[in-house]
Amino acid sequence: MLGTLTFAQAFEIGDDGLHKESWFSLTFNDIAEDIEAARKAGKRLVIVVEQRGCIYCKEVHENILTVPEIRDYIKDNFMVVQYNMHGDAEVTDLDGESLTEKTAVRKWRLLFTPTFLFMPEEAPEGVDAASAAVAMMPGAFKQKTFTEMFIWVRNKGYEKEESFQNYYNRRFNEGTAGDTTKID
Picture 1 (cartoon, rainbow, N blue to C red):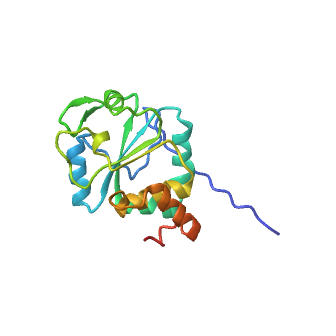
Picture 2: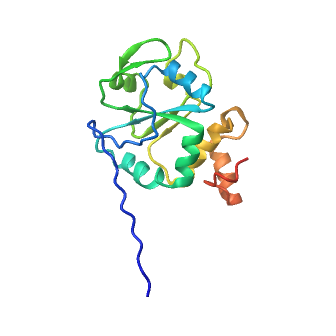
Picture 3: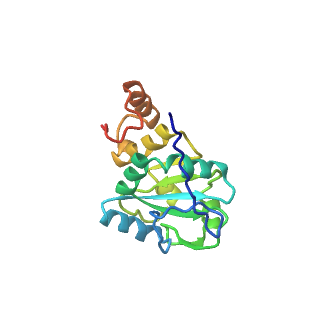
């Protein structure tokens, strides 16, 4: 007799309507301080911008971040801070400007959710977060592309000759795309 195994996964939705991950960092939203905190922990800062009712945000939380290898790789290598595209929480941008989440999102010209901003290892002065980001991933991608962006940033692929698209295609053709155990 064959049995069927089903998984019941409860996803926490916050008062703001955003999916919540217990391992996301709660901070004072001072980006320079968050970059430094991530660096001290041996990690990189990622800001994820989401909004209530976003079907692509739901996809990321329910079908990508639930994969243990992906979730664990991100948790081990990145400090993730969540911003609400329409939120009123105060943010201190890298250029020193204090503004709300929604004003910051407009300033950074972000149009899609989720958007992941991968921040540099050290906080630059005089530029905003979007200008300082070493990479940006707007929208939702499938597991392999999503994971490869995190691997590429962790390995400082943005400093190398190979673009993310060429890097991903090479890894895909090698059969290693999305495999956190086979990293260049």
